Image (cartoon, rainbow over all chains, first blue to last red; front, top):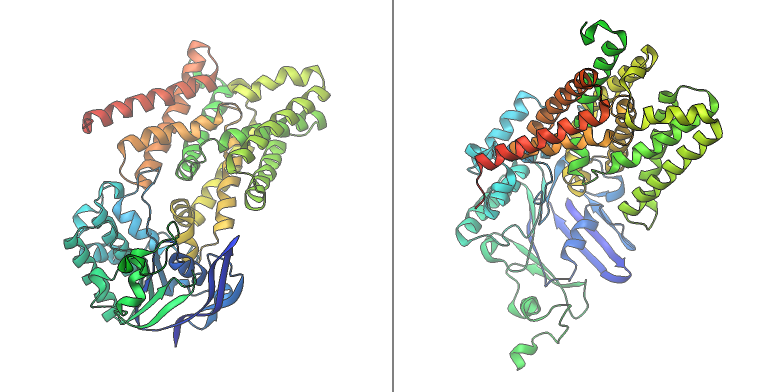
Length: 251
Length: 270
């Protein structure tokens, strides 16, 4: 069964950002979605989640067209910048609790069982003692751990993380990777958007690389890690500097 | 004689109690969504409703409520469908609302023009029993809506995109917050006035967020500050014979300065 399937997906913002992308991510897989800045990684995920309207093709979530998909409790999306610029103070516990909000049970406040799940998730990521602190007062790595706690508490079948280890020190990266691995071992499908495999190198089973020769299209889709020739553009090519892939090696 | 010996003061006290409690409860969502000036825009739209009531002889609160809610829906539709930025749409609402209010009031004649100040700046002596029923009914509706949709409003206010991936109807919840702001503006119209009502929604929250470390804490403390300032302002305005709206707003600003000081003591600047 597919967790995410795109068929000839195209997204256009004036210029095409994604072009004819067909990928099939199966339930239980751990996939690294790679590519340089501007190659359409986040756009692909946002389109898959129904946050962007495709210009061509279609997206299916758990074999249901994204527009008709209603089982959102099965999905946890952790964007790169979550809750970082909050105008009103937000406690760590509230940030995690927000992941439990659904349209069901509108009348009732958060239940005891849900409260216990929130505490357990925070304990799991080592932040239970800081649950009453302001989210913005945490370090970058700790904020990422709060996001992992959100995924834990949501108990989702599909977890999509956008650059979860960006701007985080090596020790914290390893800790995050361990938490993500535990979620995968528990049966969740994991999609990690990343520039480089780094701490998830040993975890990802499959890599999908977006990028040149055509921006926004699949350059490589196969076992992880991808052979170096498929990822060199990540380091040596960017939309701001559209040189030939591998140009630096030639020089 | 104390202030409680007068019927109009008892009604004004209840009206202040309601606005002090409800306004910051909605204001906290506006502050988080960076729409602190939305209340001002809605106040201007409500002014058109007041002018229309003068012209047609209907209840000013009821008409202002209907026009403000329609205006709130209009703002959301314009924000979703037009190419203008959010602040430009708010500006359009400001100008359209005040122009409509002035035009209808002028057409209604001189008596209406002289009553306009009561609605612009608040006048506690003019809160009738019928007005109070409107206010209590509206405040009840706002609080019940908060109980039902509060968690979704909280989630959408922090990150609408993530909220969508949780299956929350973000466009509806967004519109709901704007409509609740419109209703709150009308609730505060008689005590604080349309030109100052936004302050009782926003300033108590600005004060509370200096010392609170959670959204819930900010909302609760903001409501407590709003309630104390609204009630205190109404009582003070009776004894020292000054406008109630301005007194209430000055008290909320004083609360802001106090909490700013408390924060400074707790967390000295690096």
